Length: 171
Ligand SMILES: Cc1cc2nc3c(=O)[nH]c(=O)nc-3n(C[C@H](O)[C@H](O)[C@H](O)COP(=O)(O)O)c2cc1C
Image 1 (cartoon, protein in one colour):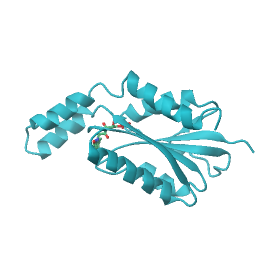
Image 2: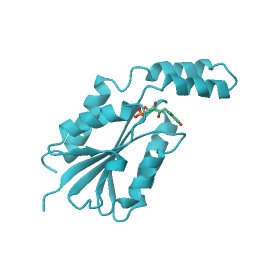
Image 3: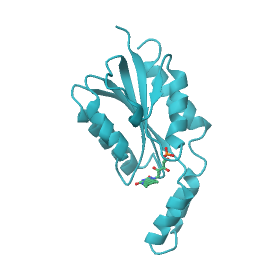
Image 4: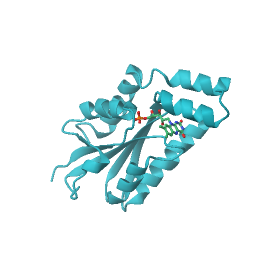
């Protein structure tokens, strides 16, 4: 049986959704669904790509809830975050979180991961700043500004290229 690539996408403000569209366009026959739209029977889908955002140092709840339903799949993960994706802690987060999601079901293999910046919702940034005493430190402000224009064209190209190489026509 031939299987189609499935992209499961969790996105609160649209950053990860934008990356998901770029990857979906790069994979012939790929289908992109929200966690709430998943059918019961996933046997016609493989590989499965999980697209999510960094939610307080974890994956968002809807992605955590859906991951145990995946069994025997080759999995790719992509994510966006407000912080610096090249930072060692960010890389460790991506690795740890992707491995956790892939291991939530049984018999899955994690094949590839991709992480880039994503613009932080200004209302969320403001709320966090208030919780931290009312003033954004220069470091926090610099991180916010650096993420402001992401995901950008290069992020989308890199993500599409990576997954096309792995899961494209020759997979
Ligand atoms: C509730 C909440 C928690 C967040 N927690 C983190 C975090 O712990 N680390 C981080 O780098 N970014 C964090 N962010 C920023 C988002 O991960 C980032 O803006 C992401 O691109 C949002 O993706 P989306 O537009 O697909 O929802 C958080 C954003 C929200 C709304």
